[in-house]
Amino acid sequence: MRTRAWITRYAVLVALALLVVGTRTNAEIGLYDKDGKKLHLLLELQAAAFNGNDAYFGEAESFVGDDVDHWSENAVEFGIGGELPAGATRLFGEVSALHTRSYGDDATGFSVGLDDPSETRIEQGHIGWSSGSAFSSLDENALTVKAGRFDYRIGTGLLVADGGGDGGGRGGWWIGARKAFKDAALVSFDSGPWLVEAFTMKNQPRRGSAEGRGWGGNFERAFGESLNLGFSAIHVTNSGQTDLPSMNVGSIRGDWSFGKGWSLSGEYVEQGQNDWEGEGYYAQGAYQWKNAPWAPRASYRYSHLSGDDLDTVEREGFNPVAYGSSDWGTWYQGEITGNYPLENSNLNTHQVRLQLTPTEELKLNVLFYHFTLDENNIFGVPLSDDDFGDEVNVTADWSVTEHVYVIGTLGYLMPGDAGEEWTGGNDDWLYSMAYVSYTF
Image (cartoon, rainbow, N blue to C red; front, top):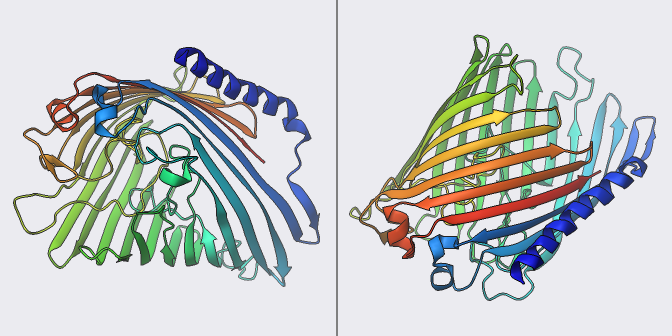
């Protein structure tokens, strides 16, 4: 019966995608556009269904309190945005409401025991000004100032990308529709090879999670189309978190494309305050056969995110701040490991990836991960080994139309000694996901 029910849920997602495809051509975005005055609707619908086997290596019920192999999620965001001319400059604004819901308990375990995990609240809500063509020596809209609730990302999102908090009583954990920071302000200069930003913002955590505010600056410089360098500095204060009331974060990063298909990228982060010091970094190399069928791209990445040594009074664990997703494995490392049992701390990861592009609309990925703990503990639970496990992911991204996007994912996580000791299980964790979105 359970298998039949989940076949039905996947069929519903496919039917939704086909329905949306059939109605796409009648969709209208703009409500008004005249003399530089613009008004438009914002609408995004998202749904995902998840099916797995042997979560937490077969010990989900004893480890998180229930069966978390099967659930589904949806998210609906609706809003309105617009802009007005102000001489050669422009004013703009946007406001939206977001509803998320989960049916069944997701594999984080955060929703176990909760009835009807769902929530509706304001997501976007900001006003701003941009310079337009006021400065002829600069790019259009080189200067921007905005305040309120809005999305913001630095680099690949290792430190700053997601200001929201999904899952738990809010539902919608994997979809992760909440990304906006609140009580935020940003001043940006973006012209030619230069990007300079100053910002302050707070996250919007779900109940029980820590709320923090960050003040910082971000600097990026492009050298032609092949080399980009960046530096960021952030001071973070955490409300109600007495063991780590504040911290300073510094990051340097770069990416370089060279030859006929080679690229290198990396980032180094230092964090610290008083008796606490964490670090994180990654280095990646890739090669793409651009003229070969399906344009295959192979890459290898090693990442290190420090862990806390339980034998010292100092704290050494990397704080993931407000990290988020910008690509597969970045920075939810492993569709199972990165989304559910572990977070971006106390983790050393080898990632090998093959990307294929059969058509402009279809992209395929095969990813292999080997996970080890930086220190022999998980969330403070001492362990005798550092081998958490190996994971394989297969993903397919299909841009069906300009507005419709479909994803399919398969995951297979094999426990190492540390994973078995932590959960008490030794079964392989299987996982699949189907997702569809419709965006105006």
